[in-house]
Length: 341
Image 1: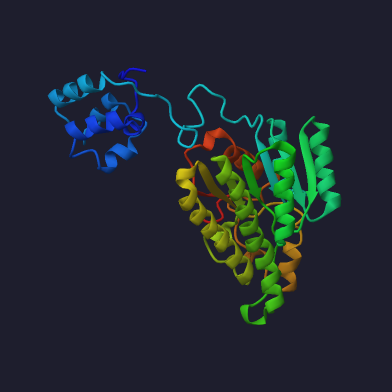
Image 2 (image 1 turned 180 degrees about the vertical axis):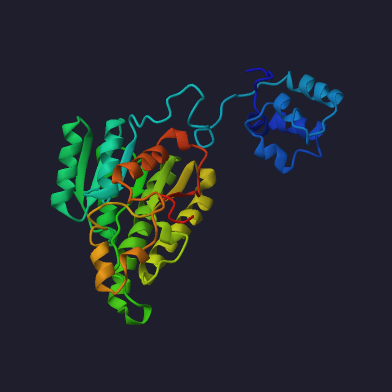
């Protein structure tokens, strides 16, 4: 189409003739970060920015020259914002989402909620019985899902569930790497290498493998979103939980590293940091504290007065999985009832 004032700067920069005209009239701006950062602005929107000083006569001459060329308008899928102002942004209709640790807790609650919002799910858990239970709960509300048994610390298992997702649904929109295990409270010097490796294998290596193989698919697609479950121990240390703290710090690091690497490829990577959540995983915590000579009141204070319900964290996950989070990547989202205040 012919140039008009609704054409965005990104489209001008992608057109050889338009780029030459921009270079001719705005040599001091053409290589400036302003142009690249404002790729979804029109020229009129750009010159309205107080810090941008383009004389009116220059702008008129520029527009006159641009009027004589044909420009293909429309952003590529890799850069196009996923949500419009008038679009319902919490819908997950048609999205294919893998969920590890789907057999209980945050994974199960997220599966039920996201299925209700229209997602097609690949449910993954080490425990076949609980994974199948989640599958039945999803199907009871007419959700669409399959279950794949997997040990997330084994690369062959991870490759298998990722491939089954692609074989079944043809794509992966969101990979929710949620599976994890808790550590017994113990002093640093008393921890065995076996105990340390067990925590790292599931909580960190499992996240890495899930990211690696999902990102391979997403890189080929040109889009996708990875969501990792970290913990408040990703941003602070926790007494007598050295291995767990190390694993969750690692998850935050992997999240940020991947977000940076894939930011221009249409792929986003974020993490959630729950505090205490009422799940089968944390049910034993009070007894663990007693067994290790801790007074229960010494356990970190949930300032909101209680542990979170898994369904509350599922709301955060579902938001991240939706188009409503389209401008978020590399974010470490804390939902901890005030624990880290």
